[in-house]
Image (cartoon, rainbow, N blue to C red; front, side, top):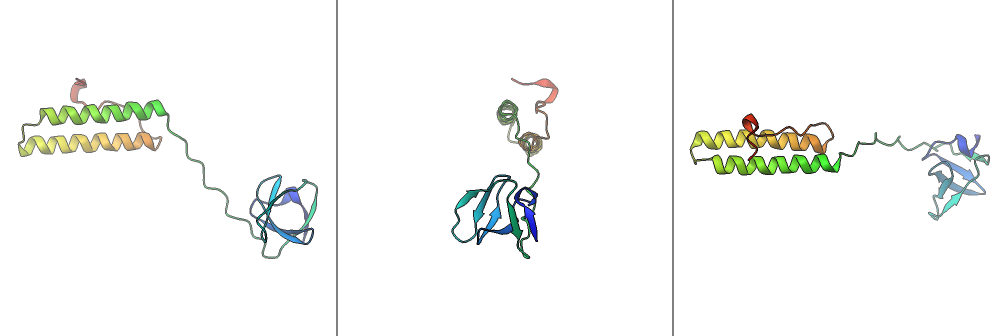
Length: 129
């Protein structure tokens, strides 16, 4: 089947000038034999191969979390760890309380890394120091 190069989807294979190519982006194609890349004008007629299936669409781009938010979340986790470590008297109840608080702080930190969380303090009643 004949098509113009610009009508192909990225990943789709086609024949052009006696060679098989795979479309990389709106301007470039890569030879499947040699691996070399060539610029292909948009209006160039190409022959789509019968098995010229397109690659699956790219995965949804993940939002990159704000570096300051990551830093604040990490500092909060660190301060929380120190707070609960210093507060612990070694009893089973105190250790269980510390484990729970640190698990919660860990979940908040990981949520910030995923771009889903806010950096609320892990300290009870605002005891930051």
